[in-house]
Length: 103
Image (cartoon, rainbow, N blue to C red):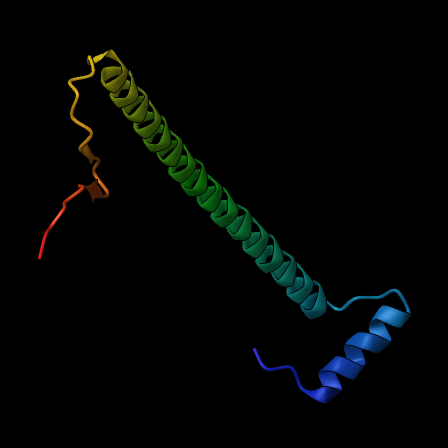
């Protein structure tokens, strides 16, 4: 619906006197419904985003917990093994070996 400048001036004049034409009242109700719909849609989107973030956070916490428990169990296993006299240190990330080479 295209509103001309004359219609806007007439609506403003009607509003100043406290009288609303039927068209302006219908337009105001339509605008109100549109605003409410947009507001509710925005709230729904925010709720969906919040739910996604909460789910992602829970998954991340579970993953961190499982990694911590895995690391703790590895440390416990290492501590239980008796010393075999070999100083060759190996881990997942690096390997340290002493090698002596002569000319």
